[in-house]
Image (cartoon, rainbow, N blue to C red):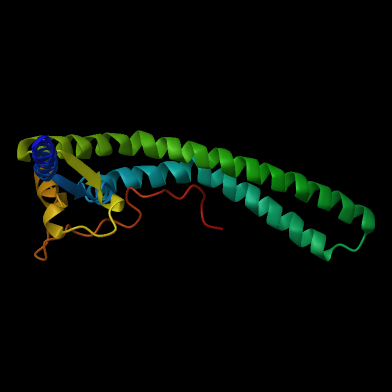
Amino acid sequence: MKQVKFLAVALGLVLVSVFSANAQKIGYVSVDALVANLPEAQQKQQELEKWQQDSIGGTYTRLYQEYQEKDSVLKKTTTPSVKQVLERDLAQLGEVLGTWQQRAQEASQAKQAQLFNPLYKKVYDAINAYAKEKGYTYVLTQDAFVVAPDSDNLSLPIATKLGIKVNQQGGTTPAPAGSAGPASTTPKK
């Protein structure tokens, strides 16, 4: 008799835990897509690109051109002493370029964070408000799932809440190229 009571209590606890787990609402969103499609994201991307060109682009272009010029002179030079000097200069210039690129990338990432962090905060605030309003226990990023039902995708209602225009197919309008993604830190060669 005690075993039957123990089994009944254990079964009851298992059922209660299963039902309480099912009561939790879980949704997912694509945070980067929401940020990229915010009306102000394109302006922030343009600001970043202008800053990169004005602050980073000129120096990199000048250093790279100097490197190319010395390299072409080296290839045409036959004098061993001149070759040795040019090779040493190219090695030093290569180190300067490498160090400069690393610093430029760090500065560019910092500028990108400065420009885009307010947009990410805006999206996270909207996600939190929507989750609280609709009773979601967990809201994860879309990348956290391999397979998830579309019914749990909260991106569209949150996009609407953020004022992002939604097209007829139910998706958001395409993001501007390069918006809110990793910014290019160096000008094209």
